[in-house]
Image (cartoon, rainbow, N blue to C red; front, side, top):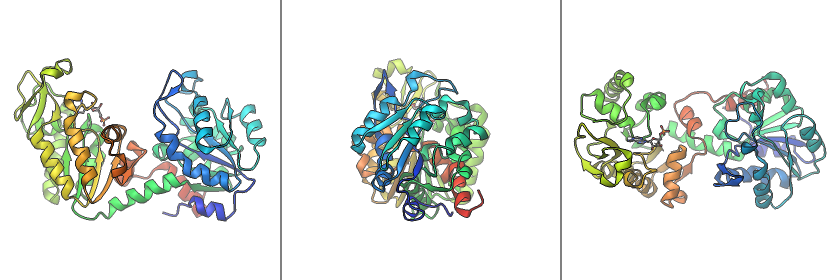
Length: 400
Ligand code: AMP
């Protein structure tokens, strides 16, 4: 991989006085105009600070939510401008469109070290359609390009891929480069290498499961996806969430894991209830009754998975072990979060729910790497090409 990094752009061709288009991931949760969590803004600051300190004229862009090509004030990036200004300690202008007159005037009026934030890229369908004309309009705003939006690097959109061939120089920002550096370590892991995979559906994680069986020493499965594996073997799962159309895949993966010597671990006890509403009357069982649903891994399973995590030298965790948003079903996910934090090996955690669980337990600073892109990190670790990274690669090779 020949992706150019930000430091190389800063030294050659240099950024002082040049307009730099920075694709960030500022997709923060906003309710009634108030930002509920600034993690993604904070993660973007190192790159932005380096650029402003070097005297670049910085044009920041991002998507927010899924406005589907329509202007939607509830998904405006305007509230983000104020937070950026406060964190960067400088004024941040806001252009109420990412292309057209306001963006062009704003970009042309920037002084060295100043910042302009563009309105939500996805107010234009050309962004997600990767429309050539729209990509060219974005590229015309700047001389140089930096992609720091790891969370959308697995999408071939105008701002992540389409515009890159239209700029003179393109580089990866510090956040994107850091993500790749950590995820690359999972390709040659120190062993034992443990993957903890949870969440709702096997179908979402099929690709990553298949790829990791080839590389991991053990894969511990939790969340509703575990019930598809158990049901495929004829075990009782009551009314738990299962995907019968994935039973064959589940059996095939167990067989492949056995062939490869990868231990595929499944829950041996469960926290069940008659419904989510009956969470207060939840019970721990080793066999799920017909009239109950499994909502979390049980304490014995949590202990087994925690022991694995403490012994591992490399851990990748993506997806909650149960319906952790409900406190009665959060203990499995919390136990895993604590064990991953305690492990002395390299720990990489991705996916919004796993990050939320880690932060809920106040353990964020004890994990080696919290990935800002759940989907992108899963695609990357299974060896897929991320279009955002491929575009930078091509630019560095001079083939763009
Ligand atoms: P995913 O987006 O696939 O990572 O799934 C995350 C969602 O799976 C969370 O909202 C969890 O509440 C949900 N989930 C995890 N375990 C279970 C379960 N046993 N039953 C129902 N939902 C679950």
